[in-house]
Image (cartoon, rainbow, N blue to C red):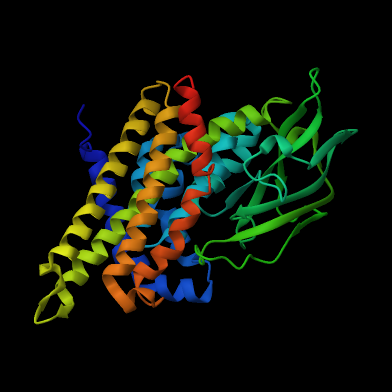
Length: 382
């Protein structure tokens, strides 16, 4: 199997790599330290078409595919994971559910703004007591006439409180199934709907230039027509979205892992110790070589999952493998890169310090790595 990129993917990768180097890198540290959401960068990425990569031109998209999005995310994450997760969440969690499950009217209303990057969407899944267990959802929605009335709360919701956030798709309990389990459905809630409260931004370990909030719903009323997809199919929709999203998170983790290599290669030539470049010391050279091995194999893993997805083949196991391996690679590479930089690696002005802080969440988000192991084992019949 040939995993070399086609000319179209290669051209996209080169364009995003140059943009990340020229536009994002010079301001990444400042945005990170100030916890500043990069509105100007988002605007430029929208103009480049990054938010519309996997969507049909009928809805303002670029007519590409999900793998093209992953290629772009990897290149963004080589420089700044906050920007990379902003794009990943906006596309995978904000726009993709509407694209896959929305009615024609819902698509016409929301997708042109979402695919252009002039509006961001969020996906309200995680709850304070739920985490990975979506079945433990307590947020409820019931019909009163032609309106859904929503009550509850959500945690850790990306892109939910920016000045250009336009909607949040909420998973809520809408009833009880015949077997006594919860009936889960997803409902589109426009931003600024009365009763929707966006809590202050979290103080996070990493992803400091990314927007993340808790949300509270107090008798939030939206039209019956805001149901996304079929009633009671919310959990199935969520699983489909997460399977694809894990490939994108693997791409992001691969980018961070590769960014650690990039920084260490450069630093190994600049830093002198005992009269020579530190890269001349085998201990440093071998560390960087092993880091490159991790980044390379992580890339192959998400390429494999992505190719299966595009071919219409089963890819759940491969997506879990890619997410698990790439996030492990990112965390290990970030730790080793900090070690290569020594004391400077502990200073936030250096990219490797940001990489170190950004990497840990990759073992948690889109399903913890423990969940990935469970999915892989289950798919093996264990």
